[in-house]
Amino acid sequence: MGMGRVGEAADGEAIPTAAPRDRVRDRALAVVQDPVNVLGVVLLLAFVVRGIWLDQPPGGLIWDEAYYVNAARVIDGLPVPPQDHYADAPAGIDPNAEHPPLGKVVIATSISLLGDGPLGWRLPSIVAGMLVLFAFYGIVRGAGAGTWLAILALALLAFDNLTFVHGRIATLDILVLAPMLVGAWLASRGRWALAGVAVGIALLVKLTAIFAALALALFLLIELASGRRDRALVRRTVKRGGIFVVPMLIVWLVGLWALDLRYTTFTSPVDHLRHMLTYGANLEQVDRSRGVGCTGSSEPWQWLINECQLGYFKVTENPTDDPSVTRTTVEFRGALNAFLAGAMPLALTFAAWAAWKRRDPLATWATVWAAANYLPYVALALLSDRVMYLYYMLPVVPAVAAAIAVFLVRAGLPPVIRWAFIFLFAAGVIAYFPFRTVP
Image (tube, rainbow, N blue to C red; front, side, top):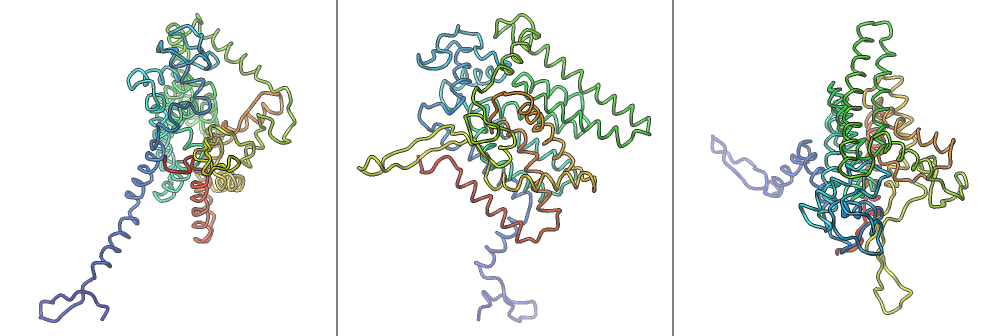
């Protein structure tokens, strides 16, 4: 009884064999216990959630797509709706001169190949979003993390709301993050010249890529400080810095000059850089209550608690005849996963401690990358009234994901704590998922 099917041994004695249900269970366990299978599932799901219902809302632009898609239309010489941004801009010239042209040119190329529709607008972001995940996984594994820790960090990054949303809408933020992380991955493999090329490409999308260069410079300084009495190490570190900086500057400045000749009216990269920096410095908010409430903009310290979330796009409907009763069907928000944000201060603190005391390579990477991409905004907030938004945290999210994974795995926490966090994080993914009903 309860022994399943019966086979026959060589001596004729009957032996029990597994029931079909038991074999299915064993095979399922074998599948989920293989990290290669789990990694594949995470990447597949990440791709699906970025591509599913890409045409929703029908014909609608989400948040700053109103700038970048219309700029791409102008570059392609396509008509822009009269009420939209850049409707009167001259054809072929990038009207969004506050940023370098490359990101808009990529979107324009996609539109010219795939048509002026959601797939044409958003496919570059999907590709860049997946490239972010591949580069990040390479960084984590290259820092000596085990496969399961790397998969955990990857899942936290892949399904964080801010990363996910920007991985499927046509804005510049994910397009710049991809080459930033590729540059960091190449540098971790000792390919400093190629890392410089990657960061130079990122700077042709958005100037905030300079924080990737700052992070890599900090890594070199840490290496230099650790071997200050070793002259060979000092020479090697200085050489790496030069090998990185020279290609970055060449790609950045020559690339900007070439793009400007074709897509803008600037005659030199210096003129365009001056315009971009001046434009950014002039983005000030008139009514700014330091850290009190949300007045359209926000302060960097508010981002640490996921405060001042941005409403990117929202669709509501009346499910009944009562006009006062509404239901949200689509809601894109510029916000971190609530539980990732909640764990962020503790995890980054632990990562900084592990980097200092244990010389943990992944904790060091998370600490340095977070500092380089976050602290400059703190300085700007203290020294100026520049407008800033929560989505500026997007380049910091990879560091946060790595830090949380390090904390959960290496802080000696009971397994129940790890699984409780994973469960809560998954609940946050569902709560922030932009599609509340099946379109």
